[in-house]
Length: 167
Image 1: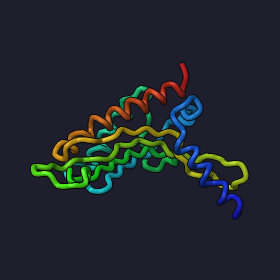
Image 2 (image 1 turned 135 degrees about the horizontal axis):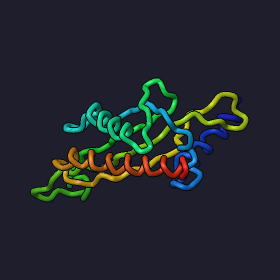
Image 3 (image 1 turned 30 degrees about the vertical axis):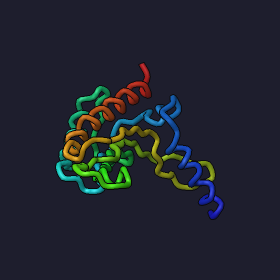
Image 4 (image 1 turned 180 degrees about the vertical axis):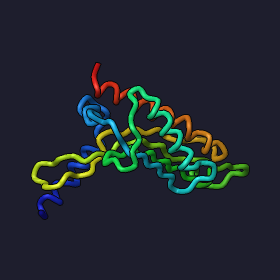
């Protein structure tokens, strides 16, 4: 069992860092139901996780392909919003008058599924597909930037699902 622990992190790192390829699109094959999870960290004023979850739910149900949203599903679609407030002084390293604040971070969409790993008895949770968009805007525009980025990610995800399901 100890040897398995040594092998598992590098394997997961390869799965997490791999760019979208036909093999990673294949990880979306036979995906019919999934649970939704929205994580906003750190908390951001103006970005509500339930609102984003409702938005994702509506788009997924409309499809194509229409995917069933099931909170009990073992497959999870996770939207992560991580935007930090940073001052221009922190970015520059010195103070200038009239410096502003910026929102820096990312919006990420990932699909997590149970996968079989040779030599491991039980299935392992792994990210089989992932895409993200950077956020680099003035702080007062950071909340408004999230929804369009989430929409772009979900459109990319649905396109990859269509490719995975074939013609």
